Image (cartoon, rainbow, N blue to C red; front, side, top):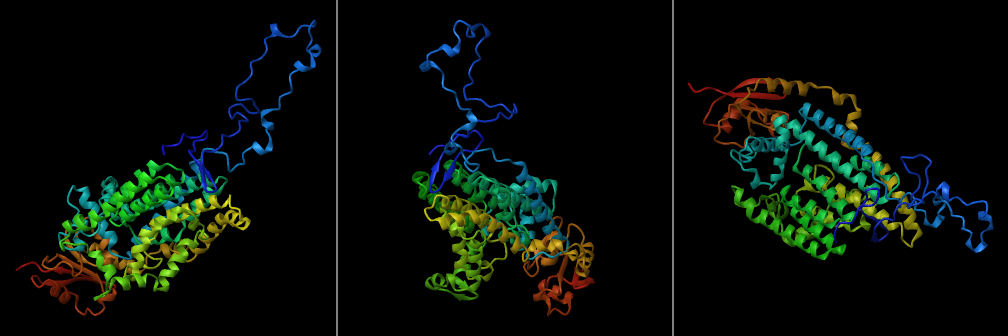
Length: 547
């Protein structure tokens, strides 16, 4: 189906209940440019003074059958034909959503920056992505030494879309630039979701849903997890869902296709978009998109990634069929999909944040690919509500909720109509209640803005590591060093003899280290090392020059 002609207020389609329809034209009334004016669609010409009735033929002497019937003012149309505010296709304002989006962006970035400034990164991922973007910015192959000296990152995850961040990195060559980019992308998705909800449901639902979505646990946990490539996917998925809800099928296809360049598993999500198109009656486009998404997933996982990987395969298969060092059969993998209370809790909160209304929409099918590999994984990090894995699901569940509410309005069951009318306020209340236990609550605590002894120690260690050196380190200092040093993961760069080995003795793996210099020499027996600095729990060991 082609693109619908926009209505008078800029909306293209609206939908009532389970049937799609073009919105009714808004009844003409007051001209916004002329206060108090009211007229017909075709204004009647005035009678010239020369044509006014003469005394010889007064209007009152005309036959009764020829007397003109009085016209009802246009503003007094029958009540049954007057559209309700929810039926009037007015242009959805942009300014309120931009304001809310700016506030959300500021909150996300403030939290991420403070975590970075406290040297409190939860993983090595921020350093990995900073090295990848820095390589693209220098027009080099995306080699990430943190994963191993000379490691081509496209052999780990296929995410060339990360190169889109290069212009920002040219201006701001720091890992902090990636944190800002993610904050802005998440805020952009909130603007898309909120405006779509107002267009679909009418009234004043949009701004409230924007806030509820912005505070959703999936986005907050992703912000806490530093930067990941899925930040690029979140607004794209929001645009896909928006196009599906407004019946712009070609737009849905075009917004879905770039997802295959964000991360390899999103090829199956693209195929799921094709399935939704098929369910909604667009069988040709849906079938083509489903085939394209599946083919690109197969291409990346079985051809492109193995070609770039030193291991010659896709390493993440073992997340599904290997538990520790033990192989897990396919049957046990399938039967164990719901064998953990952590998984069940994640599912309940995923759909529960919108009062389970999203389950009434075909859009809910889009969560299946991501949920599928997470539930089948043997890695507990994939199961729960932490980390960044649920961020791509948030636009789906919130816009599926809007579709579910719209469908419930024409339900023959009164209780469902009433429940649908209450879903948005309930969703907003859930978002505010859950925030008391989510990362952004830290912004209300004074200690969040103070540097502790560990922060001062890390800063002192940073000052002891010269710019341009090769450093082997752990999570504590990693993302702060990648912009202007060559950085390796501690113990992951044999044969390199780095200039500096720096790590945190309080890290779980390092507690048994008694002599840092001896430990560094054990890692690199081709060189000798000595202690340069010990500050707090952080040690800096330097290589002794030859001779």
